[in-house]
Amino acid sequence: MRLGGTVCFDHPDQFEERLVRSRFRAVTAPFSCATPREEICRYLDAAVRHDVLIAEVGVWRNPFDAREGAANLAYAKAQLRLADELGIPCCVNIVGTAGPAGWDSADRSNFTPEMYARIIASIREIIDDAAPRRAFYCIEPMPWMIPDDPDVYLQLLEDVDRRQFAVHMDFVNMINCPRRFLDAEGFIESCFRKLGPYIRSTHLKDSRMHPTELTTLLTECSPGEGALDFVRVLRILDRYLPPEAPVLLEHMSTFEEYGAAYAYVAAKAEEAGVGI
Image 1: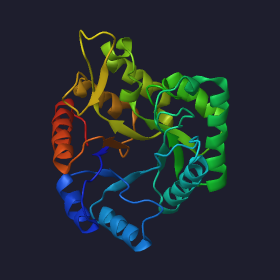
Image 2 (image 1 turned 90 degrees about the horizontal axis):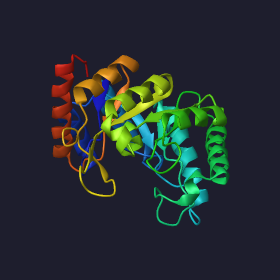
Image 3 (image 1 turned 60 degrees about the vertical axis):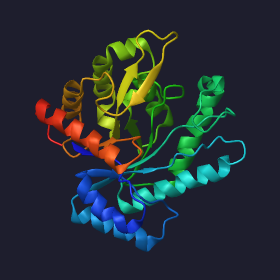
């Protein structure tokens, strides 16, 4: 696998130096469809020079927002077109919500049949309008919206029924109850066994559960700060993913935090006998 993450930098001139120091072999795109083309070219050239895969372009906007939904849908299409033009394999978003609490929030409407139909229609519209040939539009699982389960994701793939729709894997986001947490590695293996052929990018982080707090409190955290057995997890990823598959650390805030997470996972990969 290609282990990497997000390169944190304050100015575009810092990107290449930080990229080299990070030791990452795959990164999230440090640009969007709004970035000047000459700046995008500089990022791409730096990645090529150091054999780093730009693995995914993010959308992270809610197509069902009451006021900004149309603009967010247009942005998703533009991001997918950019990914396809540049040969970036994954353009990733969450499905979104019609709830009022925030773009990625829990809401009782998230799981209704009406919302499911809207999700199918929005994904189809994004893919059909962008017409990608190389990039895939992918949905990141979430604890409280579709898809929250590997079988639900398989059904989503079938119902969307588009060749350029694929899977973004975030197994920690689907560890959303004590049963999954307490047999996390078994659940993670089931995710990759079922979805492995469709995965275009994977997020890597850790999970912890407060052992006595009622009711259940589950929190994501950096690798090594939770309960996941990363030797087992990395062996699962190595078994089901192609050798060049991107696996991206996420949700650290600083370059140093990403460096610590990378060092921890790299050590566990060596222990597991897994190449990164």
